[in-house]
Image (cartoon, rainbow, N blue to C red; front, side):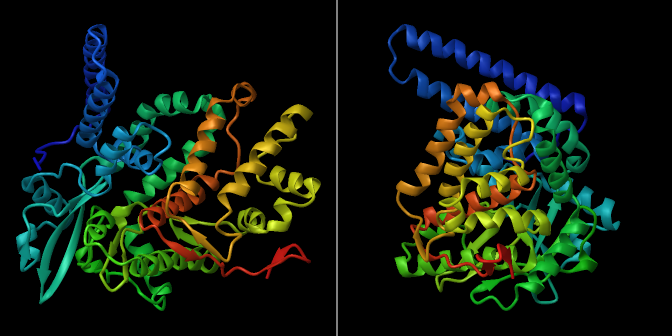
Length: 443
């Protein structure tokens, strides 16, 4: 893959890059209309693929928050055409990497030394490159290490990048800025955290230590003395990303075992630590033939406030979702699904929408065992989301709904569901939290 010698850093240059991409898309439409005029039956698909290629190329050159948004989109296969999600999925671990001179420059800025002065060996070409940084393989004193280097200017451009993509997001969601401000603020705060490698170092060591007794899940050791503001050094973990792993034709038993370990990992983090690895895309997990799972990248950790946790996870109680509407209505108000300013008509409309949605999203939690493979469940989630996006009554009512904490909690579990779907896994989904149905509280 061709390496980049520079990244647009200033707001003007980054905005100009997107403007030039818009011009290319305009050209794609000109070609589309010409093809359609002569009866080319592939014209529409060609347009989609050309636009996906041009938009991804632009975002991959910008990197940072812009490319991170593409990565997030790639995890929601129902949000955009397949050509977009497949192309954007490259942002998870195979974006165009930086050239070695830029890597050396980053090292000198952080340590006053080049990589060759700090390590016994250091690969000049990146082994993985994603939205925020890229990874190089190194060795020191007999240990094989992974060294993650943050792209120049990424931390400083997060806010301006989100301003650039905000109009696109609002257009896709059909909402006004004030209606989604708290959610955009939540995304911005998490993206800023992901550029703070000192925080990631702390979180990685903390969560890895807390999860060390989980069977079949392994984490790298981290090295503070070889890490800094823009560089993070850890053990090199062996294993394969999910698509590479599935090409080895593992047995369904092994795939179920891996799926179970992923489920148990998130169950433990959510219900014991109240802190979850909130970037569950396939590039952050490594799988082995023995069914073990390696976990990397704790730059995005969502802390779950007790007040939100105690309310939201009552929705895992089957009795509540199929019981008293008054009780459920009260909970929906507490979770900001319904507001006190809603009219009676709006209250009933949103009540039905969120009751159906929660019954669907929490279905795996309310079963002793759940099959995530095939199309039935996974497609039903996205089809319901698509149905809601087309409803005129919801658009008329306006206002995005739900606690801001749902942004990363729901994203995390939809990402987990997606991986379990790829594994065609059947999972024992009994959860570790203990909810007293009589006292209506967690114990």
